[in-house]
Length: 336
Image (cartoon, rainbow, N blue to C red):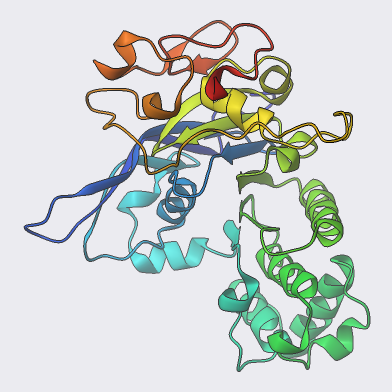
């Protein structure tokens, strides 16, 4: 993916995030996470709720609280470590260079401030424009994300908009200053299927128009299929498989990846065919320090899985953290 670029736009190296107050046992929400995103590339971070995806994005954005959190590793944006920057420096980058679409627009938008004020605030903060120019640009942005009668919507409050419209407003705010990196954290979670498709199409078109790199955080591999180039599958704070989208869908190797794909309903399945869920719960894990965290739920586990921690190793066409990978096109290993 280098092309005309000699380094990744974002390079995360051995990122770790641990929660716990002084005197308490720390909990590792993210551990040894490394990934690269090149300019214009679309990368997915996939996993169940609680796998550490959102914490990873908040660490990149510098939005984790100071108290009770320990962050390690490197987050290099254009070669500069974001973890070493001051709050003021990060505030200058957020919105202009790096932006984020949060998963719940009703809690992300201020309920007592109009949509117009919240949108123009970003433009006035980062661009050299007048209030009139900012309002004109805001109307244009709402129109681009598919909101009808955008001039009127600027005067409305978030509760006066539908869920799909609120999510489009968040996308408009995130892309207002045409950032180079956009992080989308479950942008369609609370929406129905039809609105999900519309929002994803808007996001896809706008990212393409601005040539922004995209980090899509989701639990839905169906979202990944039409939007992302590379996929990183995350489980219990660590990446377990990383490869090109086409290779992942054609031949998943980690049992967890196979389980995620097998659990997706298919239109070509026979009527009444049962779904194949991953057994157990994400809380049923072993510590990564001494075993494979997925072992209690894995149908492919062998003795080594509960005796030592698997390393993330390059295996030809992908990076894989597994002692006993799935065979070609075997999507049932995790559920046996």
